[in-house]
Length: 323
Image 1 (cartoon, rainbow, N blue to C red):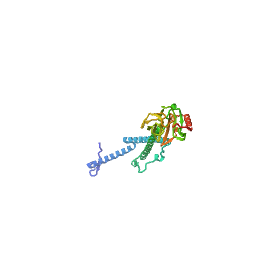
Image 2: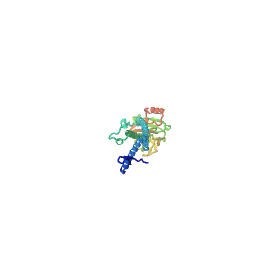
Image 3: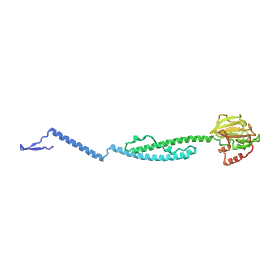
Image 4: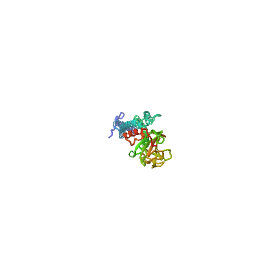
């Protein structure tokens, strides 16, 4: 029950009940509500300092999780940089050296990004330094990976060219060792079998019975298979590319035609004695950029060191050639 308040009336010498006007009642109620609201706000603010709301707790947890992932990413990036550094070293010192390509300079590999501030849009956040740092490292790593990728593309192209070149360059004897009677004459100054005068012999003569198989000494394309060259009789010429052409002369018959592509070891013809010849044999030449060179340097594919030394000794002896 609400308390009733009285006041002493000196005129009537009695206590009279205090009657509140409606305006006074409203004022008191308003003051009470205002005080209640203020008190409630103070209590909520005080509790907020000690108790985090659920949404903020979730955001804080996500932030901590992001920092953890950043540390793991940074660790993995450092590992990737280490692997890339090793690959770059091997690329310059092994791969590019082997294929006779110029190494890529350190300045080119490690070059930064010039011009305007690329990371201005990432500034102004609580963790801007962290975000800019990881973005910059990723950009540098991406650029180095691109350069290395282009380098490996070049190495693959060089390797394919090297493989093709190694398969094309003459590398075996044109007559099988089992079918060979003897190596009759080597490259150099020899006595002409018809005039007896000293004459430059631009190939090697292999004596074998008529009909002995003759093999292509490297991959290439037959550019001639005819008897229209003076002195060679029936002969074949193969263009191996890379400046190399081989010639096989005095054949008894052909096994290929002009324009045919051949591989090393393919049967191309048979030993004979056509043209300017003293007997059945194969005259074999290797030409590089149009100039005849010593074929003895192109038998590394099927001769042992001992056999090569024996052939070198025989080829160096001056005597009479067979053509």
